[in-house]
Image (cartoon, rainbow, N blue to C red; front, top):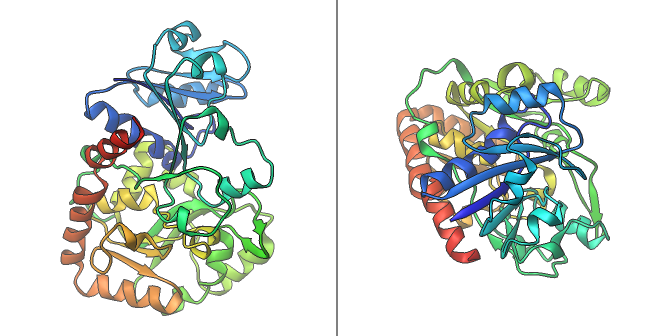
Amino acid sequence: MRILLAGMLAGTPGHGGATWAILQWARGLERLGHDVLVVEPVERIEPASAAYFDALGLERGALLERGTRVTHGASYEQLAGFDAELLLNMSGLLRDPELTAPIRTRVFVDLDPVFVQLWHAQGVDMGFDDHTRHVTVGLLLERTGLPLDRRWIATLPPVALDDWPPGGTIEHDAFTTVGNWRSYGSVEHGGVRYGQKAHSVRRLLELPRLSPAPLLPALAIDPGEHEDLRALRAHGWPLADPAALAGTPDAYRRFVSGSRGELGLAKAGYADARSGWFSDRSACYLAAGRPVVAQDTGFGCALPVGEGLLAFGDAEEAARAIGAVCADYERHSATARAIAEQHLASDIVLGRLLERVL
């Protein structure tokens, strides 16, 4: 099958994890034998983005300047002539009707559940109407009680197992993670405020004192967040630079694979809505055989929890989970990889998803 995959890869260089979130889909689809062309719409093709894009080594792909036919990589004519049978439009990024309208099955893939649906309900044009199917990584989205005016097909995030072999050397003897302190503002609905990762971590400030193992979050925090930065330092949170440790796909993979495990932090909105969101980042840790202690969003509805993958609601529960992993690390490590193989492998996740959208 010819599949046009649109997503964020290189338009903002220095985000290795965000790049992997899309690469997993591309490599997974190729593993299933599909003909995949990847396109990323950007405001302008900058030299840094072009160089970053080239380094990805994609078989076929392009950066496309929005509203034009200017590309880097495959030409616009090649994009238009690809004759795709399926569009997988990550976050609805591609909005060029000349490229999308001829495709029979057009799938909006929601990577930011709760927020995407609330923006739509508040009148923001998310592009839902331009698609024939709607997919979300919010496993429990349809049970949240949020305003939904269409059916959402839930999926776990895929991980291309061959890219994440287990058993590497631990270079960071700590529970790590990578992410943004804030991605955008909070959203309010029905008197409830659905917040960002910043709001989640504020509830966990005591964790470094409680944890039996070191923590090493690589969080992109604006230097102007003076109050939060003071609070984090006062409570013993070490703050690593995500651009330095995980700014490219290879660096991100080294950081994840070289960690003792993951402290999985979710946006407060994901957890408070009980959306069932599960991180593509956590899928990588599990595939690499690194146990994950993750903030509970309800993902236990689809994944086995308690060994290899542990959920927590507050700082005390997180500390106990980290202690349990450290007490029998080899068992938890082996189970982490098994969870990835049995539940998150791209062959399984994408194979099932294609059956449901076609």
